[in-house]
Image (tube, rainbow, N blue to C red; front, side, top):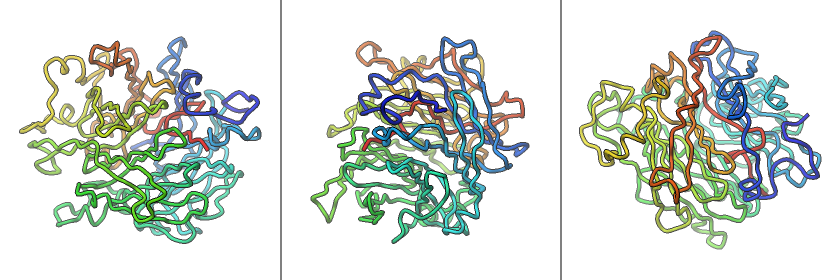
Length: 489
């Protein structure tokens, strides 16, 4: 049985606007959860997000993996709107790659209930000289593609694993070449392109950010990515690698990448974590020499501080970006600042910030850190409505990180864990006591009186109260698809 009712078409929606206008309100969230103390396996939690339900804002199901220490992270469906015209496809499996163990789990999904269906052991990835599986996207063919960040030894390598319809690893999508680093990817089938991003090698990110020799000159530049890669979607051929620093701007750790949802759109965005900026790219097929026009459209300046173990300046750390299904709004999270920002004018010369909200963050959670100079302070009016250190008397641990937006763009969910070893360094209280799931109501700008982002103080899921001890929650998925899973052909 599928989590989506069977109709006269495949899974998903006929278009992004169909999803925006006619998609159902989310009933549940499937959330990946990591056991930081490794007392039991990681698990997938189902959270009730239906306000009419008696179990609203509660965890109603947990499916534990079969091993300890996997580090669940992202998740992806076996089928999405790219299979809309295929009546034989069902959206009924979630694929869960693991960043530490290199395993991949496949779960059956039936409404709020999930169960373990298959485990792909790391040796099956090593056979193809792959490790560090990260982003999972279904393909129109029925295959599943997963980006990988390392070779079998955990050294840096950007490549892509293919699973067939039986969830068997059978090939690398990019058979002709690999790139220096891997991380996220998105594809636009009508343009016959795929673009991927870069983090670093598994052997580098797993021990933690501060485990690196940051005092060594150019250590970050030499060990973390700064490029995006343009591929031909049908063939897997690498067309061009573009160093984002060629724009004249800093660009360190280009992580999450999103095209506009319109399948004809050549426009997309990539957020760079450490340099804390967002680039917009436009694909131009007629320009073989420079097929991507790239501009920096958002830059969050670091704050001069004392008490930060990383130095005199605290970077914002843009760790997630998401685009509303109608392509009107871009939301970004700045994990160290604890901020979520909303922008509009995605196709205009300049983006306009609509609003921002701060949910925890190092400036609140770390008493040792004191601001010396802040280029973008909240004014007094904003401070009372848009800076939050607690919800319903519960302290917010960590900072706003992973985002998921409702199909109609009215409800924005966020978790505050990034990766366990990095959580321990930046937010030790959250690492030891669990992360949280928070909800922000997104209001119509014309009716919001300048405050489009409103914290829902009736909703919080505290993973510090779990039966088997605290957990770190990360990726979120809806049963009927969402703004980071569905692609149209």
